[in-house]
Amino acid sequence: MDFITTRTPKTKKSNRSVPIPKNILSELEKHESKQDNIKSKASNMYNDNNIIFATDFRNYIDTSNLNRRFKKSPKRAEIAPIKFHGLRHTYATRLFENDIQPKTVSDLMGHEDIQTTLNLYTWVLDSQKNKAVDVLDNIFTI
Image 1 (cartoon, rainbow, N blue to C red):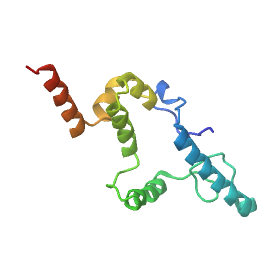
Image 2 (tube, rainbow, N blue to C red):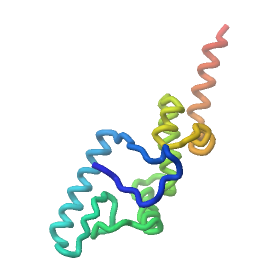
Image 3 (cartoon, rainbow, N blue to C red):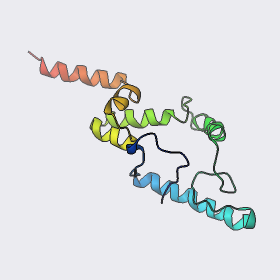
């Protein structure tokens, strides 16, 4: 499954292949099947642009439309509101929480400079602070 970008990448590292976890790939394939079903019903009104997230007739979704559609998702999932771009921050933070090396996270995100990843895309969560204190507690046990 390939994805198409319609913008020039910001940096050389932006143009990359990103591995997708199997469970997410499975969901994407289900979504693609739904799109194929729409295609069969839409006949000549359907544009086969080979994109996964698209309008009902498989045209590109503009950014404002994407954000408007996405805005409803957290509410349906009963989670705190988040902007679409915020998913990149969550992605980086969750990888760090699970001890993925900073260089690996930076590479997956397509950042030229690891500082971009560290300074802009990660948050220090209370659970991580507590984990650090526990480590220190073990180090300094008398």
